[in-house]
Amino acid sequence: MGDLVELRAVTHAYRTKAGPLPVLDDLSLTIPEGKFCAVVGPSGCGKSTLTRLIAGLMMPDRGEVFLHGEKVKSPRKTVGMAFQNPVLLEWRTILENVMLPLEIVAPSMPRSQRETRARDLLALVGLAGFETKRPSQLSGGMRQRASLCRSIVHKPEVLIMDEPFGALDAFTREDLWQLMHRLRAEEPFTALLITHDLRESVYLADEVIVLSDRPARVQYRMAIDAPAPRPISMLYDPDSVAKLAILREQIEIAQGRSGEVH
Amino acid sequence: MDFLRKVAPPLLAILAIMLFWEWLVWVKGWPNYKMAAPSDLWPAFWKYRTLFLIQGWETLWRTVVGLGLAVVFGTFLGMIMGFSRLLRDALYPVLVGFNAVPKATVVPVIALIFVGEHDFNTVLIAFMISFFPIAVSVSIGLSTLEPEYRDILRALGASRLTIFWKIALPKTLPEFFGALKVSVTLAFIGTNLMEIVEPHGRGLGALFDSGKINADYPLMFAVLFALAFLGIVLFYIVVALERVFAGWADRSGG
Image 1 (cartoon, rainbow over the protein chains, first blue to last red):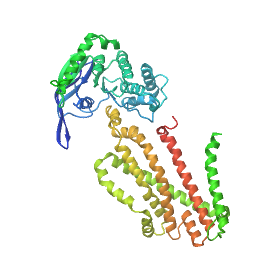
Image 2 (cartoon, chains in turn cyan, brown):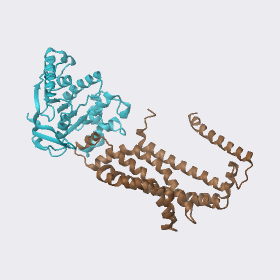
Image 3 (cartoon, rainbow over the protein chains, first blue to last red):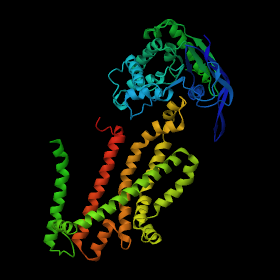
Image 4 (cartoon, each protein chain N blue to C red):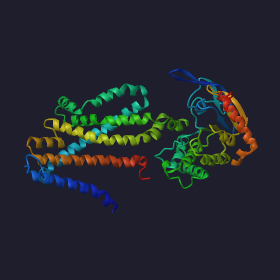
């Protein structure tokens, strides 16, 4: 299988009052089809910019972004997005929230079909019975589950997640990690996950990419080839612990603090 | 029982105030041409009942038309200012200045310019006085829309119109209705200002004015009560509309 997402020598800077602020510098990376790629790096290193570039929400100053070998010039229907904030629409029920992308992507699809699809997904993430609830009636973890359903309801080729579990408590987060693996088994998609949590990256991803401090470039890549149904206890394997230590070290290098005494 | 608990307290409060008022007039021995008592109100209503119906209707429809125009224009202006930073910067000071001018000073000017155009100038004042809160609330609602809300649809290639219709508009509705509650009262004030100031005017304001000229205190107070009644009705119509269209924003009920 080929590369689904490809960034070729992407350079980008934001225009601020104090002059241009370079965020991405000659950044190249690829995500093969069906793979789960986690991107970690220091705060403010341009990780969110990366998601917006791949989603086609903005164009890079230089370099190119490809999806399925096609140059990304504008947003496309084959992308799903999830954020730290679940951004559910309060005036819609959970079911209607999940159906929202289908209204844009497949306006000709009959409502009953949209509804069935949304219901199936909600059942898959353990939200059966909550279809008619309002977002404010759900807990944070449940809201994020619903948000994940919405981001994959239209069967996107690539799911882009910007710290989707960042605001959740530790146990809820681990629940959702496991859910993520179940979802991938049921609904195959290529994924890009932006995160601050190294354990999350090791547990979920097939490949972890460490970005350098701003302006970001790829500093380090690590393959995680543990087989598919990963138990949460995997994180306590010596192998995983060693990997976490390496990643930790890489982050410190990225932060430019490798020489400091801890 | 629940209904009774809701309705009884305000009714009892009104009754208590009326009794105190009646008592005050009786104790002080004020004559009719100095101060009216609640017991004078009903005879006044009955005596001028057709006038009340005719003039009440005049006031009501002109207020509603003025408010309707304010909703259309205010929403439009709010959209322009909410979506374009440049236009917001350009229009905001103008709007604030316009709103700062006490409308009581504008009323005679408008009355003179459009003398005799009773309906037009009354509707105009009701509109002028009430569109500002709507414009401001819609513009703030739109400009404070979190970018993620836009992005979930924009990332799918949705048009600006779709994003406005599916996200921005419903998300702004609670603010819009909050402003509409203020505007409905303002429009009512605008209508009455014009009706009172304008010579040979119509509406409850004109009826009030004729009561004043004749020192007919029972009539004047009866008009005040009719105005309060209409104001309450209009206000609760807006509240009912809010329940229907933006009831989701009310989380007090769980």
